[in-house]
Amino acid sequence: MGPKPVILDVDPGHDDAVALMMACGSPGLDLLAVTTVAGNAPLAKTTRNALRVLSLIGHTGVPVAAGASKPLGRALRTAEDIHGESGLDGPEIPEASFEPDERSAVELIADTLRGSVEPVALIPVGPLTNVAAFLKAHPDLKGKISRVSLMGGSMGLGNTTPAAEFNIYVDPEAAREVFESGLPITMSGLDVTHQAGADKAQRDRLRNLGNVGEVVAGFLDFFAGTYERAFGFDAPPLHDPVAVAAILEPALLRTRTMRVDVECKGDLTRGETVCDVRGVTGKPPNADVGVELDREGFFDLLHDSLRRL
Image 1 (cartoon, rainbow, N blue to C red):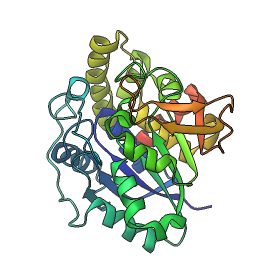
Image 2: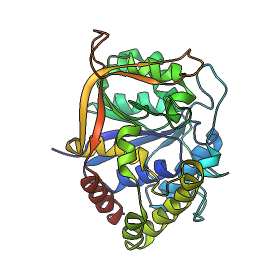
Image 3: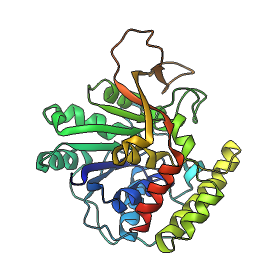
Image 4: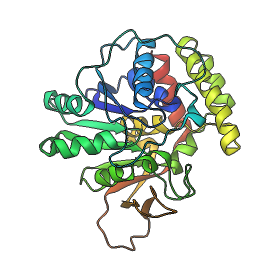
């Protein structure tokens, strides 16, 4: 088996930056394209950050296309309180050495799928606006997607409201489209991403890699500070790399197949992923929901991929 072809849809974001690096350093993945979406920061910043991260690690041959600058039908909510003014505060990294692709995110995804011999996994780790827009524009290409491995949602507690995780909260209508698409979905929600907390020991282990490891550890030190202030703990979860790991080494993630519906209307529950753990609705399941992460295996995989950069 050769490397698995993937497209990463990102809104960098510290954990997005690490997810990009992990995908680039993993021999088991072939990163065909990167698309950006507004989420952790506005689109201009998330696009700049994606280009800077890929430039830093010398992966400037990967086409990067800017996507949606706002959710399908709502005002944009961002997370500078967590990721800083630039969306990627912490250690200074140089400006990008290449430009974004002239195509839109939707066009780049479509062209990439058309050009791939085998089906491609989509790994969206921000709001799902681009993926929903793509599915609407190119229903004929759905069969070229092997799986959607997304970071978002939660079986229980939210992190943006008591009920909702950030990515789904920002664009619940897009999330609903994706969950109702009929595509195979792996959902890495807060239940499993919080098991990937980068505590001081893990950050020091990354620091010891030198170069890229030092930058990643620096990003995570900044991220740890904002998490300490916002949530009272300093082991910031590596949310987005879990969705990459779920494609790279599926055995690291224990999942349960269930129905997931997205609440778009509730005053208190907008953006909640309502996971039918007990099967009470009788609706057909539509997602493999992560329930447990092999933490040690995950960090070994991360370490190994960053070491190769």
